[in-house]
Length: 340
Length: 263
Image (cartoon, rainbow over all chains, first blue to last red):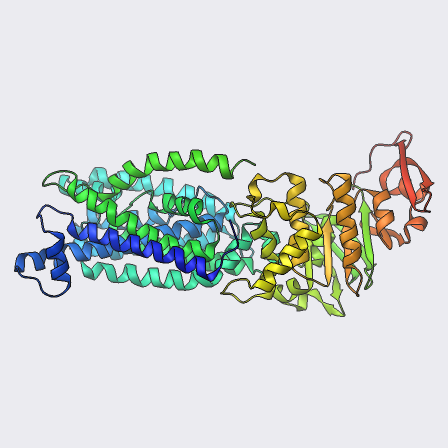
């Protein structure tokens, strides 16, 4: 891989942007109502003829495509950041337990909320609160003498995830049938909550995450040489670790709180991109945002159209498509990159 | 660079007790000692990765603890014993990472930066590795990439931790020549090495580390004595002179009834 230049960065990002636009077109066209591409174009141009088409494209599909893009981008960027933070290519956005905390918060409200008068609208805030609490816990437990150790982080995350799953199983088993179904859907991950109001916080934390991570991109490259070598090249490794941990956790928390635990996006997209464009974080981070967005929009379009008249949770599609894709990647990647 | 009364205790284990060592401008200093003697620890203190329990390291009159990491990285580069890289960067990209302390947070390396990296690789004869993944390279090749990366950093002081351990003879000579050349024009290098004969040929000062202190530091021909080798390594050795007057160590065996020394 040649050294990164501005021209190559812009070129790759433009190609990915075209992919996102193509994915969005597919996302807007996909669905049971059979609206033609020509109609969609005229609706987007503000010249829609039928009210029904305007309604479906602008009020139903558009918010959902937007939410898919934001969630996909957040998960893929968080995946890149956690992999860099833990110096482990097999890490994903959920490995540190932030997702477990969010799921616990959301599901507690789903199963117990109705008893204290909390409706479904309280789920995303409760899930986000769970994610924040987990981040604080990770920070507190894994910090030794003011330093956050990566091994401590990983162990805390693994143990916390196991604890959260047990608590979720307990909550699900005492919940009623209706709540049980929504809990199940949430654990697989779905974009059916795709309204504009919920997209706002996801967009906000994605923007904050990208704005804080991009200036650290060179430092993240250096930490691939090991923490000691990174320090000897001028990186304040403790500061970098804290910022990345918090930024990535907030992105994951915001995404999970509206869409549930959509798997594989944060694992596959970083790997696929590293294979195609190299591991330099200055390009990889923005590329992951675009790649994750395109991938999840397309998966959601498939989820909405695969079965006639019924919608599948998008998490099932990302896992069904992502699992085999990941194994194939691992085989190729292994030969090329993990030969040491 | 000056080590002034540096001591460090890891856990409750005293590693270094009282290190006084000067690495003068324009000179190459080789540091030798048995395994676990604290050589790497001393380099970690000099590069501010580890804080000494007592004493201080000065760089051009300034304590290294008063500099920011970035300021220090602009003046001091380290070649570690071994490098494991967690992502498939190309060898050329790794060498170019040496420019990092001289660049801003954002933006890309300039043509000048790339030229510096290429020159360092050519100097070591490894330019053909530039496009290979660092993960595919052998231990010796990775070590050469590390040296090139440190040279690309254009520091005033170069710290090398057993830089020739994985290298064949030709590359050992090439690296040590490179370090020699580096130390001209008022720059300095501190090299940890186990290859005493090769070290004697390429350094100005040989320092022997034993029992947490510098046992002796001076010209190699003065420091390499039968008694010193017995005290530091617990070996019986002959010192012979090469035709050009450089001392060569010929180890003959462990000292009678003695186990290898425990640091």
